[in-house]
Amino acid sequence: MINEREIQDWLVEEGFFKEKIHDEHSIFHFIVNYPDNNIIDLIQPKGKGDMIVIGCATNISPEHLDIIMKSSMDKKVELIWNFKYTVNQFLLDFQIQHPDNILQMFVISSTIYEDGLTKHNLISEIKKIFKAKLQCLLQMEKIFNTEISEKSVKYDDDRMFS
Image (cartoon, rainbow, N blue to C red):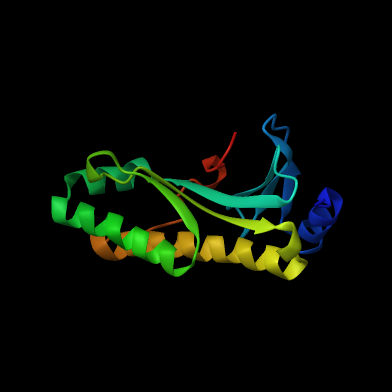
């Protein structure tokens, strides 16, 4: 059985623990703050006593949605494919919401099973998820020649599960 307290202690030791939230669909649900002002969810789903899921949802800001909507279909499709290639290179799972090829939101996640759960693996997966998110945002910047800023990406609103 996964030790909730040990995981919370690891997160606290590294300065990543933000809060524990009530979630009726999980055994425990932590909000991780890595890096500062970026929200990552760490969840042990009910009925899955041997695993945890780590994930980060990102909503595209209204300013960037406007740029995407005004762009050519070729650029919109290029962005979607670049996101898919990028996240796959990190060996992570993902979901992308892109009606009419307009990227609106994406979720990047990973699963760690009990037999592979160590502090090193946990922290590495958290960092890898953030790096994949950052790489996706940089792809968007490159394709649309825009500057992704801290102000335009609303980290605090990007909980994977509320």
